[in-house]
Length: 269
Image 1 (tube, rainbow, N blue to C red):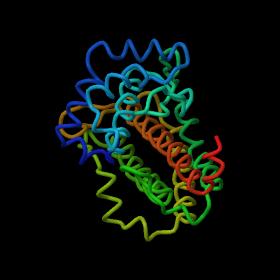
Image 2 (cartoon, rainbow, N blue to C red):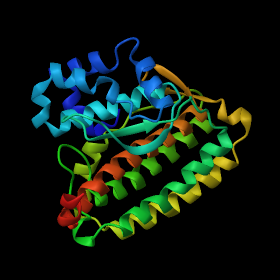
Image 3 (cartoon, helix red, strand yellow):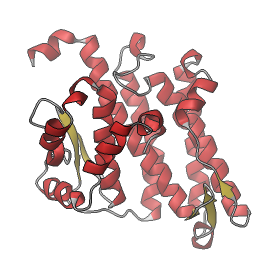
């Protein structure tokens, strides 16, 4: 789960939503809808609306529901097929549609997918008016500027992780709170174009180094947060999951910003 929800996850409401959304057997319901091209969250939308009417006024809670469903689907190997599929009912207008079957990419394809993120992000930025680059979404989440800085800085952190796992024997790997990092480094005062350029250059270097890894190096392990042994390949795949999480957030953010920029077009639709 993305660190943007760290504060919300500490609330009783988050625990109650998780108990419903990630209950045993829920994955099967999400998977059935995925096979027919329907947003997975539709499987629980009505039950959430019935049991948690208060989240109708809580954007962060609704965002958390979508993120939690996405986490369940990624855990079972599904990829996003469509970022915004229609959902009936008043609580959720859209939800992610996932691949009909689990997908396990070969390592080479993972690296290729990682290499595309800077270009996809730059294309999205071009579609959004400059005066909205620092506008945050409703609820909880980053602005485009903060996304650019976060992606740049997390790449540097992942590059350091990859390097130490490749060289050291079972090194410690600590998780990073991206929200705290954004506050510490004052992302909103930085320059988006510069951050985007640094992200692109850093990602290119990172992917070039990943292509040189041997099968033996990819099996080396680090100790995540003192409890979980993760291979270097698993860490690389975790970075791709991180990209996909931000991809979904960026799709939602773009839609919200475009609605602010062109309110008449959206009201007409």
